Length: 62
Image (cartoon, rainbow, N blue to C red; front, side, top):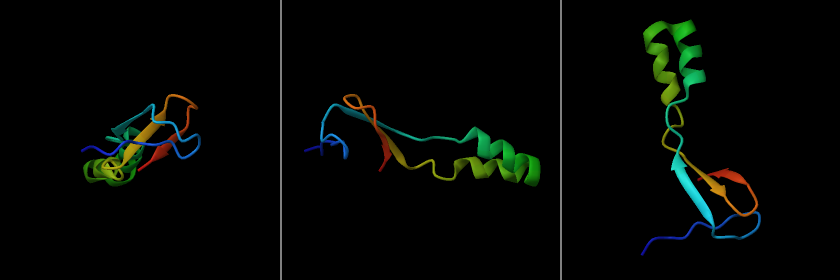
């Protein structure tokens, strides 16, 4: 049975979530300072899940 996501602000269950993915800003900054290996910095934090409440508009990380 899947666990329902609840908003910590309003307690609503009308929420969605997705993975963060590659951070282009951090990857480009890493490329400027560390060349090709700096692109790997863009993957930092990419496994985190970002949730959004459609009732109150709050964003939070899981």
